[in-house]
Amino acid sequence: MFKIHHITNSFISIESKNSILTCDPWIGKTSDNGWCSYPIRSLKDIDQKIFKSNFIYISHLHCDHLDFKTLKKFKNKDLTFIIKKFDNGILKKRLKKLTNKKIIELKAFKKKKINKDFTIAIIPQLLSNTSNIQDDIQYDLDTSIIIQSNKDKTIFYNNVDNSLNLNILKKINIFVKKKFKKKIDVFTCGLGAASEFPQTFLNIKRKKEKDYIIKRSLREIKQYINYLRPKIYFPSGGTYTIYGKFHRLNKYVAQPNFFEITKSLKNLNVKIFNLIGGGSIDVYKSKFFFKDSKFNDEIELKNTFISKTKLLDYYYTKKNNLINIKKLNSLYEKSKINYFRILKKINLLPNWKIKFHIFKKLELNEQCLIDKKKSKIIKTYELNSKNFLKKQKFPLLECYLEYDLFESLLAGNFPWNTSLSGSTIMFKRRPNKFNSNMVFSLNFLKI
Image (cartoon, rainbow, N blue to C red; front, side, top):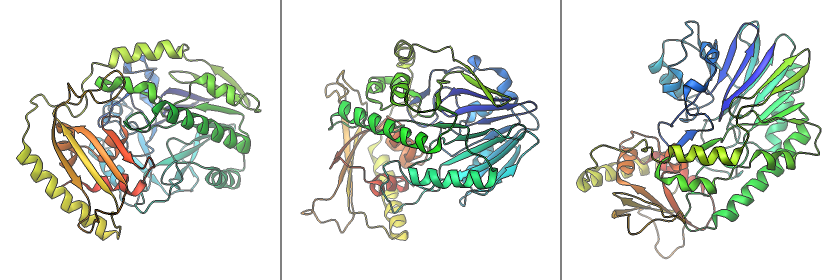
């Protein structure tokens, strides 16, 4: 018996006769961005057997993969966590704060039999971003996992959020064939953009950018499947909705629907299954049996889901929304010192300008632009190097966010990384081009 069961986003369980391995469990609101798990947002709607898992694989630190409130529901006394052996050790430290359960740290590209049911290997982050843009701020963050059934040797490759291109996929495939002596049978990989672009960008044609990203993503997955030739592919990852008052942005999230996916891949010799929201694949004697999820009407379901979550408060919302500019100024100046100190340490010259427009309340109108009547700006901060030459045209990023969020980010209460990608900050940029160094550097803007 080898069963792959999808719940939501990258929350996937793999069940064998005697044990269950669960990947990235997350249900409900995220802890530090504006996402809600979709199409399931209640723990009551999940097969309770999953919470008796023997192993939990955590791919990386982001809040839609490392969710403490969901992890607390797993009660198996023999539960073991599986993570990559990261150089910085942050993931292990955070898990130790949550639990005293056993933690297995695996080196990248090392095959390991974890019990009589499963053999696994962790694939490290080999590319910093999905745009294939080289950056000077290297992040050892994402991972993927290879899971093999020890009984029938079925191999499942769960790419999770790892940035991918054909050259990296070839390296992974060569590793699997060499070490596992078999090709990948089941492949899952997210499509589109699970990020802030294009929906939060105010000065671009968002519909056009959305369509472009989806078409490019469908071309890439077709290329990957043509190369890998797995027996089964199912989409996972990036299946979320934006909750709260910025819910209108959902219409610009660059995620293809299942009809678009099947249409794009219809001529390939691979079975395409929609498992999102509770579907499963059973492997028995090398045959695959598919069970659909109960969620079929994508458009109706999403509209209903959004209507139920649009009134929820954001993770940074405080009960007493008091504005203290003096305190904010102090936080910003200390954070700025730290920012330039780290950039100097890693020998990175900040040849860009970043502006922060801070609002007491930030509201969007029906066109998903800032509602100037309802949004009150209280302060603008400008971040650039002392050596910045005003006459030169350096890249500009403008960030529009609420006071409570900005204060919390500077204080280090939330990571910049997830808030930047989590649809609670609006942006303008000039030129309309992703500058990885500029964006990633904001992770250092805190005390």
